[in-house]
Image 1 (cartoon, rainbow, N blue to C red):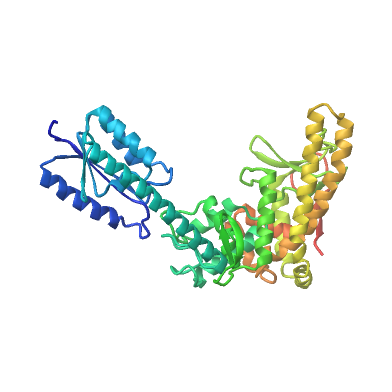
Image 2 (image 1 turned 180 degrees about the vertical axis):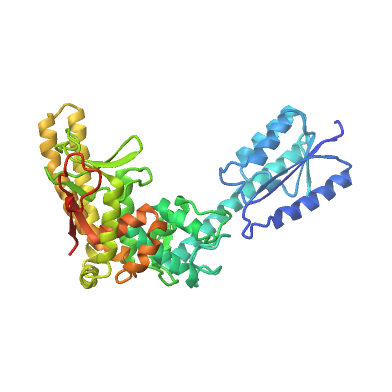
Length: 467
């Protein structure tokens, strides 16, 4: 047997609650002492922290060690205990076979040494591996049972990252962050996108609770859609019951957020907003919706003809002037008494939110099915248009009601403060601006203008205010 001169130290801990790697560090210290006592030179150290050796999770450092053994760069292996290598009998046999094939016949551990060429040594190693696997299985069942008890009792799940909105005990609400969550929920329900809200969080320099230094849309989506902020105990991504911690938002708001999120997922992703009045303008000639379009560097709203839009194609208006006029009119209307009455009436309709979102989803599904039937040749183009028209009307009617309800969130704290908002208007992102406009104005009809006119005639704009 040749003398080992290049040893690998393998260390692992399956659960690191603090994230400081203290358990691994203690293993390394003892393994280095063992290598020194044997006169072995440590060639490489392989550490997998907070990764189980019982479950079939990929352990990148363990895999790298196996590659180095196969390449002949390692003559011996040192571990604190045999189960630091693996707790799975099958994986243990694969490790032994690789070592035998590569000429590695020494495994030294702090607790004992194993001679791969000795029958008794291998028997003890196999028994040790089987016992470790059994203990891991029993421990796993105990952990599952304890977790299930916590779920049933509404107790929080552990973890090293503090949930945003709560103190490190995961139960006490941190009010400064709870206020942020309430504003995020209200603005999302009012029509702002996750991307817009994430940008706002970063602009306000609101710190995250994890390792990331900036807010991402995925992180924000997780916070807003989880039941935790509504006082619910989640389990496997779904609410499992009432939690012991207080709610930050209402259960009704939580359900509205989930319904709105499902609706947006069905619609698919869209590019960042570039037009303030998308979906709010109609053609004064034919009554069809105006769509955003650009010609060279000029943004416009146009009435589009064709099977997908059905307009007359004879209406165009430059975007910037009409957006400026309507924004000014909206801000003036915010300071009128009529808006206070409108806002008070909306609050009573709040429970209709989820129902209206469901109606929109159903109509969108019908439109997709008609499109698929047309693509498969099952219906003609006239039949496609005839089938889509009622579905489109359902979407428009439900969306208008939804806009009125959502407007209560968009206008929170703004009614009566139009003058102050006017000074901040330019600093608001387009999603926020659109939500405010939509909450005040149901739509606006654009009438035909004079041929060759260079300036916007305000008489062309006929707004329909929400009531």
